[in-house]
Image 1 (cartoon, one colour):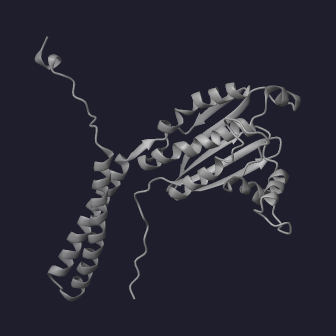
Image 2 (cartoon, helix red, strand yellow):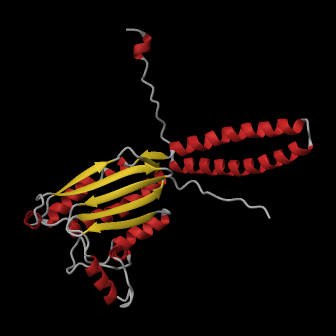
Image 3 (spheres, one colour):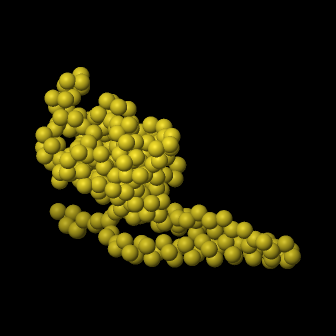
Length: 273
């Protein structure tokens, strides 16, 4: 047996505190700001100094290219597969279905979609609220589903996909859908809308995100307490994201969440007057 086979295996992984990555990213952000200033000064000097000016401008451009690569590398290090969030939901759905006497199959798609760890840390709880709402309000009991010509087992589809600089998460159930008329009546009772205010069914459905709004007739451990979807909206606002609901009565409901891939980039427009 040679010495090479006795040597300990070397790992290519290094555990790094996320706070250090945050600090490193902040430093890169400062570098980008100063790079912009330096590039502007170099451009002004190149216009008036024929010799060293253009050489300085070219050097600044090279520094700009390297700093951009540095920023992209750090951003990539912060990205994690969204499966870190999704993997907790199969057990949640099983427990909720058992508790409600229902049969629900959870289908996961796009688990390899990568998003910023800061988004990963925040998006879990909003999705929990949406899943609880879908299982309790959306998916019907097996007997009711069979009576309407549906399979006894309901389906819940949770998917994620990257679209440009955003990640789009969708939660779709094949349950009873949302009764827009019932939502409109409840909103009218609570004074959320006026009696003479005209709302399309699509707009009426968005009222379910109003604080404390609930159409549940009974209070259970899962629903009816007016807690849930308004919490989702608050979380989305913190993440600079959007949420929208679509429904087809008797066929199901779809929630769409649009989130930035990262919270570490702020797009700005510089204006000189």
